[in-house]
Length: 502
Image 1 (cartoon, rainbow, N blue to C red):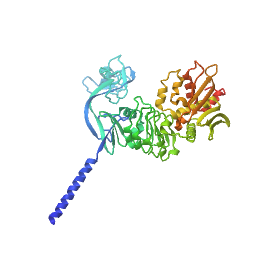
Image 2 (image 1 turned 90 degrees about the horizontal axis):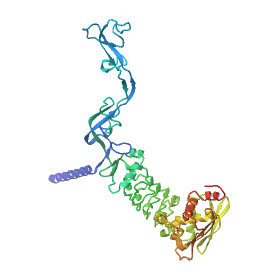
Image 3 (image 1 turned 120 degrees about the horizontal axis):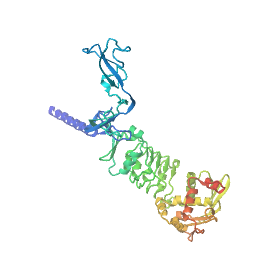
Image 4 (image 1 turned 90 degrees about the vertical axis):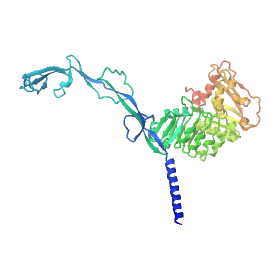
């Protein structure tokens, strides 16, 4: 029995040993280096406060300099004593034994010389110089640096000096830190390094390290905002952003991103801008419950309908236009078409009011009707009003029919190939634009569009796109559409028609 009890005790001790070993293995720490305000580690001679460890040092040459702050002529001094054998000498600026002598008893002149000392108490003997040579006052020596100061001249020992020293990279160890490897994503690494706020670098204690390329941080969740838009080396992949779980605002617009799987981990996001990319699927977004602002415009998204699964979908201010709604099957009837138009209008033309019925859309400005569309057999036709209202509908069709790649293709159209710009709509679109004699002012816009393009039914056929005024640049037509129907709003267009210039 006693032997059995001893064995049990040994077994428990063995388990405790294994448990303590596991604790020591799992208690990994992260090195956080002493760094500048951009997160680049820097060397120091001695341990900065809070950074007790180092990786070994390297001998370097340290340079410092000072500048001349004042120049003046030297002063003549006399060394006076009682006699030739006396060892007591006093220095003064007048002859020994003279009426103004500091000590009339010291009448013997031991020596006379010029000194840069301004008073007899200022190390007169130690500042001897030559008559006619200027004396200088200097600033304090600069902090020592591994970089040579501008204009460095080792022969000017009064202004420059150098010395050998051993410098170290100092670090501290923190528990629960984060190390993110960017070896396969230099573009994202450089974008974060360039764009991140210095306050986040300080709060999260971030280091940007190389060989291998990585970011380490004491607490990466303290980074709340990243604006990585339109960087020089366009970002393609964002997988490493999955670690930044504290983000509340993220702007990745104007890059070349296709997959956004990392976004699903950023559950604290309140504002997300992914516009002007090459994104295909929005599935990673649907679990984000805190979103308030979402911009997915100018992409290649084919499953926009999934967005409705977001918990607070109806309260989100969202822009998902300039994606191909047809591929997403997002508009299947007149009611859905009108809903999207009204939402598009709220983003771009809030100054207008619109009345919609089962067979019409009527535009009002200051209670006056300025444009009307009628629907018959799913053909939407502009029947009256300002020409710019019709072009505004064309702009909306771009918004729900064209993706980023479609605009890229249109940019390759020849300037005089008007039909090329609208080729995606084919015979579903009838657009006839005429100009007045100045070839710049719109005269009349005839517009109709077969909504079966989106509803999925057969086309009525026979549509044409025409610009009867030869010699009028088709690029000018598109420029007019872009300028007149952009976020500036229809108000500007309407006022322009009444004589107020843009």
